[in-house]
Length: 259
Image (tube, helix red, strand yellow):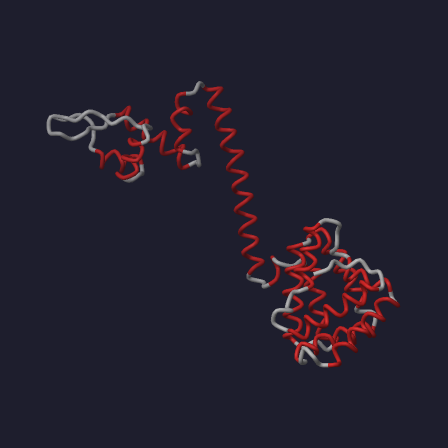
């Protein structure tokens, strides 16, 4: 009578699949027992013990490559290795928790892309007469700005919030959004650029809205240009207005990078 159990029985007793047992064999974690006279491999008590040990460690999160040395370690080494696995699992749990929280904020729309303060700012814009499409474009611009210059984003938002208290600035900004529909050669663009430049120069505190993203390196200038040019590809009138405004401010000594 054959001693031991078949691979199917061994897998069932250990709570794994036959495929898993063979996988453990392939990685050298469980020795393949010899075949009996009928050509079947028979798993004894020691084989089952080893299989259960490997399965338990694998289920606990120990990488397969580390299980062999772990089972061969003395008690002190085993404890140290287990502690290291626990540490790595804790880090993984924190990472997964952060991902789960990110997905939760994604369900909220801008929650993962913009901080609460920026979202509150956007919620105020319809009160100033901005259309939903305009608010959506401003939202996209804020997302881009925060991604490109995260260190300067809070300062920028502070300056823009202050700008909302300036009724003339708000009126000029609304006019600029209206300019999106103008022809690129519309004479009103030149007039608007001049009026906006004059108001900014007369109120230097507002200039920080344009300069808060600027730094001293070429990369900083490139980031500023990406933010400044946002939307210009779709609105040629906007592009001309931006160029004219920046040229007027640059001529007045405001440090704005050239295109």
